[in-house]
Image 1 (tube, rainbow, N blue to C red):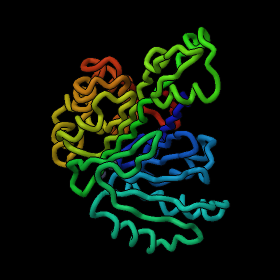
Image 2: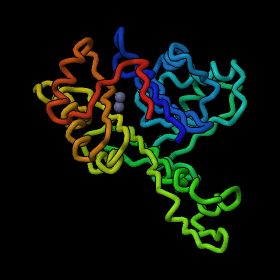
Image 3: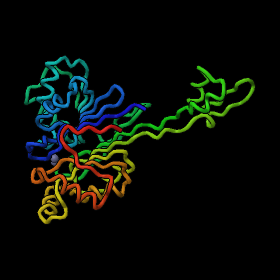
Length: 300
Ligand SMILES: [Zn+2]
Ligand SMILES: [Zn+2]
């Protein structure tokens, strides 16, 4: 199984802090590199993380708020100057495509071939994985995303070594076909096992809704906003007014969705250097939780 590296490039929310840049996460799968959101300063964060921005293949934008998109023109400008030579896909929510085009046109980005596509539902689907988006409930059109690796039939090498099965016959087993060796029928089911595909979900910014649950359900890794503390009256009021998830709501959803690991990001500047306090609050609800920090790397 190829490892998937997820790097948190920015973990702050609307206002950046000395320790937290605006929202952006990058992850790889085989020869693909997906950037989720691109807040201001993301290109510098990519350099700090020692990643190559010219390897980005797809950008998934959750919504058209500044803390999620203001880094795009700068990133595209630099990519055009550093030899980016493929078509870059920029995905955004339904109804946001025109605005995205105007935004990039206005900043005069050129020298890079990019395509903007509004998406909802499954929009990437190949033999290895799919990526889908579901509508969230924010004050502008907003997408949550989920990456789902396909389940794969794998050969049990220990069992295989008992038989003299080689080459083409192994390929047949993988394609769910039984094989005959020395006149004896060997069933593919006896020599294979199903390897469960991994799931990563991204939930920014939204008030709690049923699609939050659908996105994160059974994720190996769920990355969710936890912009305010719901245990304070100010946090509760702010998250309601601006349609955000509180840390507690995300922790509860993570527990309900049985996510293997929940990482809370998109943290308000009011909690600068108070991560221990946030973690304590979240852990009261769900033990498999972490608070994201800039340039943190997670491998699954
Ligand atoms: Zn935001
Ligand atoms: Zn927002």
